[in-house]
Picture 1 (cartoon, rainbow, N blue to C red):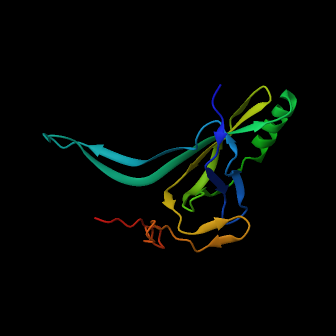
Picture 2 (picture 1 turned 120 degrees about the vertical axis):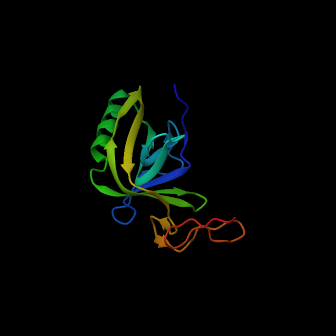
Picture 3 (picture 1 turned 30 degrees about the vertical axis):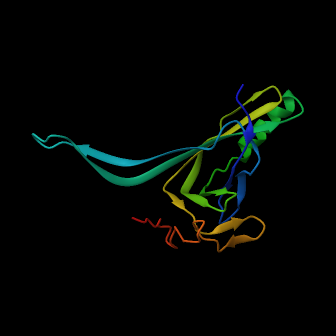
Length: 173
């Protein structure tokens, strides 16, 4: 059996609208939130060239996957919980906000839930979501479900801002 541990990230569906918390801090998880990203790349070779050339074409795509562990009182309640969670999976398109207790957060743009597989081991459930979206950006605002958006910016320990208002990461040489 897999190890269950507490979530270190909050996953919020549609942070600018309905604000559905898909995973909260401390919620039991079967594994970490997995991220798989990429972009379209064209590769071509020229006649008698020593090697091929790759051109990034954009169209960034990222996939988030996570497995929440639900504890119930028995096998039937576990199955009912699985069905309820499957019905509750978002069916629209929205941004997804990933928040950390440190205050940093990231946003997956234009996302949709692709699949909601689930299973159970006795009275424990495994409720999964696979979310696919566009680009992943650093989010410079701070979202709190009780008070809304704040003005905390990404900063280093010395107070230097590392993300601009346009979500561009600053780099230092």
